[in-house]
Length: 68
Image 1 (cartoon, rainbow, N blue to C red):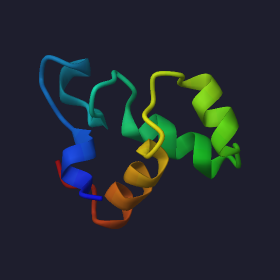
Image 2 (image 1 turned 120 degrees about the vertical axis):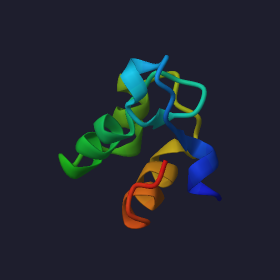
Image 3 (image 1 turned 90 degrees about the horizontal axis):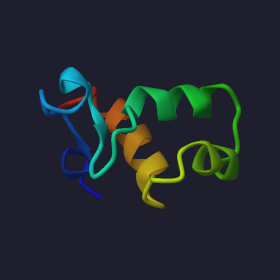
Image 4 (image 1 turned 30 degrees about the vertical axis):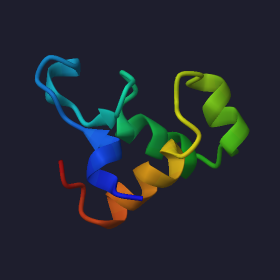
């Protein structure tokens, strides 16, 4: 999976905050849920618009130094 195609930044979406592509869900919010110990199901329940591979994409994005 290529992180840069899943986590995007666009000034017109949340002022350029990195989000999961195709959503208005900030990648940092997904990471915060994971760090708080939430299960995948809880994260998807909280953000129903997330694609199924988005949690892994956010984690990979963080590991790769958060490029956008």
